[in-house]
Structures are given as C-alpha cells and as structure tokens.
Length: 265
Image (cartoon, rainbow, N blue to C red; front, side, top):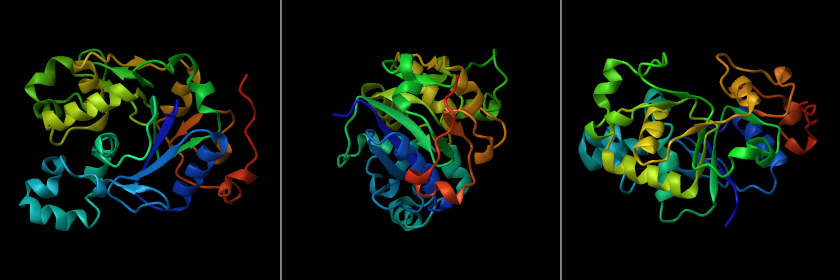
C-alpha cells in the first residue's frame, strides 16, 4: 500500500490537462497518480467515472429524468458541463468504492486538471500528512460569505446533514486519509444529496462523520490554491501546488525537460 496517492480528476484530453499531469508526475515519481475522467474523455492509462456507476445511478441526472435505460444512453455521452462542475467530487467517491479500484493508499490528494504542481507533495503537505481531512480554507454559515450558503442550496441538504453544514474551499487540493475518504463516499451515496455543490457536500459530510476538516497551515496554499483568477506558467515563481493553470507551455509538455522553479524561501 502506498503512503500517498493522487486522484487526477479531469474532463478533457487537451494540452493543458496533459501538461499538468506530466508536471505532477515529474515532481512526484514515487506517488501513484490515477487519472479519473469526470464523465469526459479518458486519458491513456486512466479511468472513466462511467465505469464506476454501480450504486450511484440514482444520483445521476439522466437516471432521475428517464429511468435506467435513458441513464445509460446519456452516460455514453458527456453530461452537462455545469452538472459535472458542481459534482466534481462524485468521481472521487465512485473511485474509492469501485470494486476494481487498482490503487490502495493510506492518503489521497485531490488534483484537478487545472492544477499545476512543481513540488514534492510529501514535503509540501508536511505537518498535515497524518490528518484525516485537510482543506485550503474552511467556511461556515453565518461566519463566512460563501456563495453556496444560500437558501436554494440549503434546501437541497438532507435533513440529517443540516446541523453539520460547512464548506472546504476549494475542493481541489484536499487531502484525505483512506478511511475518511471511503467513509465520506459511503455517506454521500447513502444520503443521496441531489444537486449539491462539491465544496459544501464534502466538508459537511466529513463533519457529520466526525472527521472535522482542518485548514492547511502552509502559507503558500492560500496564495497558490485560492486565487480568484487563473495563473499563467510565467507567474509560477515558487515550488507549490497551483490552482487554476489552464494554459500550457510547450517546453513543459514533456515534463522531464521542464526547468524546476526556484526553491521557496
């Protein structure tokens, strides 16, 4: 069993996605990286959430709007981009409970297609490596101005989970123990939280199970993972994990040729 593994969640096969995947693997050759398509195009050697829908079909909009036959017909194509974006946590849960899961690990790091990594993840995660659930930032209703703490979203929360509502922002870059992520996946499946938003659902369910998320104390996480706008590769000036990097540099498409960024002080 690996000490750490990465779920690389994506929906397309394009230059930016491949570049970010290559950079992640280049800087972490010892870490198993598992590409999982969020109902999109599968990367070479990766997996598609459509392989893992057993036990999850009632949460898919195509099933709820037309029964099993229509569900399978719709799943042969990509789901609506907005639904995929709002439910970007579901493929992670599907993978963790998938009977054919190819990788076992003690800890799982969530990596989305528009994240760029030029650092050793074990060093970057450092003191939180043994924590069950880690997020970049935590938000609570009445305390924080998080858009999804609105009346419409709150109505979607199952009654049993409402006392535990919180958000982990962003979903990208979260760290879980194997036990915590599997338990969260099972609870999401049981609760049948239709139409939820990923960042609120994952933190709320974790909290309901006693896995109180903690915030990553690494000061770089706030700067490089919570940016309001996207980064270009020219703006990457320290070794860290970066979120939203949606463009690519041809020189780093082959990550072994990439020039490492300067060490952070």
